[in-house]
Amino acid sequence: MEETRSMSAARTPAPHTRDSLLTALAEAVHDRDERALRRLLARFAEQATLADLPALRATLGAARRERGKLRRSRQGHAS
Image 1 (cartoon, one colour):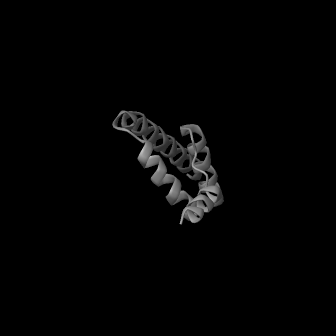
Image 2 (cartoon, rainbow, N blue to C red; image 1 turned 90 degrees about the horizontal axis):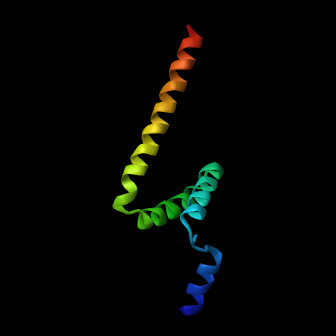
């Protein structure tokens, strides 16, 4: 049993820092690796705290605003 646990830990090392976790998340998105993405998102959720929520909300809001600007600029060129 212990050997199985150590083998799985060797296959999927846990990121030790938030930066390495975010880098791994970005790579999983880029590679379209849904299994890794689900696993990494679960780890991120474990690390996230209530203090992180305002920063996350701000980041998501900024991304939404950027998408809106991009859509409006594309619509402007189409007409």
